Length: 324
Ligand code: MN
Image 1 (cartoon, helix red, strand yellow):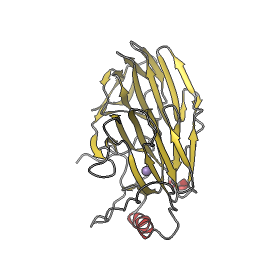
Image 2 (cartoon, helix red, strand yellow):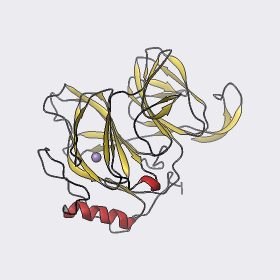
Image 3 (cartoon, protein in one colour):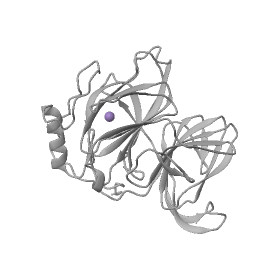
Image 4 (spheres, protein in one colour):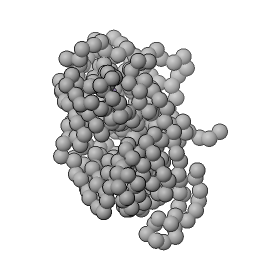
């Protein structure tokens, strides 16, 4: 729902802005095939593909690993994006074609910048805790940086903000003056907010950013909207603060950024600008021999083959799908 109305949240003043509240339902997806671990994908969504440069959001778990296999995603390629891995519970082992092997746990960030090409695998390590829960996100690289050399960074020194009933860990970008050391290519923010039981607080926002929130644990009221784990709550731009309250202790993921106006082609694990670029990346992966995506060493399983290209040409699309 989108209305031109008085926003009661702007510093107590009555300011005319486009206030948007959209509940974006997620779609269940089996990661790595029909028997893969189930994730809930809220980005890209039917009518809204991006929040800032955030272009992909899978949430998973809590999964009971005493009865299920956990994550097992074999080597696969990426171009034109960054992958952001963040855990709530458990651990994941990342390997990539640059030779990195890095386990992550809650509180640490794995950030892989694909640029012109990289491949990686992700799996539940042999020695692991009983529960796995987390999110996997992609950030689209802007045209100027989309062909940068691939890189991988692990951060366990992320800034933490505290307020009454609120603790915020800044994964990417900047929140209320606290800046993550993770490399970003567009103005954006990603943060995990922990709300104490009964918390009732406000968080400063940037009016030029659009924002969306996903509850990971508990249940929070976000800008007055109750939000349980599952859907992504899109709030648009134009707000200078956000009300947050919690019943039980709750954990909420905050995503935001300057609206990303470039049109993208997103297909399989690739983010590009046009059809032929995707075809070339797919052929490079399928041929396995041109060195663009390197080799992931140490993963016990085969690489994931690319699906066939669709019969029609891929069309670049904007951040919002027009309502027809
Ligand atoms: Mn990946």
